[in-house]
Length: 293
Image (cartoon, rainbow, N blue to C red; front, side, top):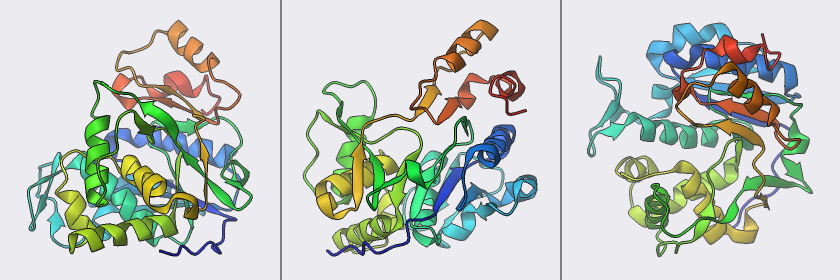
């Protein structure tokens, strides 16, 4: 397979899936983008139709609101008042978490920008960020930590690797395996399109159908496996194991001292910070610390 390496790499897209419960966090992310992200770029916030009115107030010259339903085939749909599940006319119901990943793949294929950068609503920039953070010698940054998923992990990573290999028609990736999951992840549109076509050749059905029937699934593991094991040096990526976001995944609420210590633990390579929505920490508690009020 030949990949076209002549695409325009002078701009990029930021893609953020969100929903009503994360609106304040997404609003803070938008403020951080306005302050720190250097044009040209476009920010796409992906929400369900029911949340369009709420999120429309975030729309501006750099930000567009995308409706999830507009990205999907007709046979994937919601039923009223059922929030955690999507329904399929071609298979079993699809969990919302899986559908969010499907929507990220779908959007990154159809936008104008060749480079997609993924940030969740509970993440925010704290330092200047632009195309120079993403492109070196016409190669796009690709996060991969060799052997980052060791043997015997008590997380689903091994299942995600197995599913990715199966979708791509490959033998299972042996453990220890590379870790492709982090924050501020970067993809190339051309590679995503080629990956989806590859899946369709293997399964003789749309990639939507193949992926929506997959129980254990990680979109980042799928893309990473495709880059490492299929495209290899034809991907126009450069490999970077550096995590460029300071993250707090603990579901426990931090005290004021713990919150301040966490913010102060940010290292020079961190361009962004994340305080998990699961911790249920009020946005205004850390917006002031980050000077994003």
